Length: 455
Figure 1 (tube, helix red, strand yellow):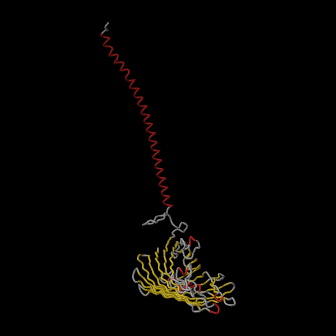
Figure 2 (cartoon, one colour):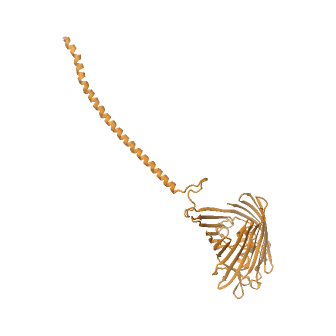
Figure 3 (cartoon, rainbow, N blue to C red):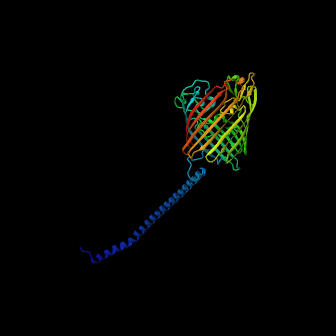
């Protein structure tokens, strides 16, 4: 059965009314969910913002801490000097006063020589095989063939620490060593295998202002007058040559010192020679020196006490020395030394200080010696030297016997070539002679060469 037309018209209207009534509720429900979501999003944004702020604050603190650490490290480390940076990262003298400067130097030296002695060979291992030592020249022995020696024992190095206080006081510590005198007797340390030699003390002293204490050259010795030699010393016969412990005071041209005493003794009739450390008083020296563009001139005096057992004697000596410049290319160097009991100081102890007489007393021996040397520079790379030296001792043969040294002399001529700065290549011809009280003589002829690099 078909429906009434009015009913068919009211059906769409009812649906429309139902939809209109339901729509506000649906819209209201959708709005509440969006608000809830927006609230949650806002809360999450606040949490994220708080996390970002905390992270940024933490990074700022870390950066500040790193900067503080860097500042502390920079303050603890010494400031690097301008220009080329040093090799070491920190000071090389951490135990020294602030501002102390450290320096190092020395040289490497190789010596090679051929020797011919008229009356037998100089004993192997003797110092006379390494450089010219007049007292080692054989006398009244058998001749022989020439012999050669090579060594590097005179290579040297030194260390120095210098400081000037805020008040202007100067302090210096100095140590110098080489490899001569240490010696060795084992297979590993002799010429059979490795030629190993011990480090040997040359100088060790501290100086402050005008004072010096420690081991260095004797104040009686004029180091500045030594000639330019290929040999270790050169004109050894007439040279005062001593290093020893001392206390020295210098003021202007004057210097005075008290130094280690030691007495060398020749027994009655020359039966033996020995050293005595029985001295109760030090050796006393005084020196005056003048210098200028012309060179320098010096006079020194020496007072000594000699003692062996309970027997004593005294002596004194004087030394005049210097260097005179003849021009830009030439100079003369010289020394004249004489005195009673000068033996230990002259030419590596050519003669003794004292001799024991028949009654057991000791008597000082008189001696004298000197040298003169001419140096000429042929050019900036080549120079040469001529030298003469001599010594003489007034022995009483009735006490000393006839077998002691009366005199020595030597001639030296050398050429030294420097192909590069601080590098020397030299050759020296040496003729030396030693004579005994009975006029027996022995001579030495030597060609001495060296290569030396100083730094």
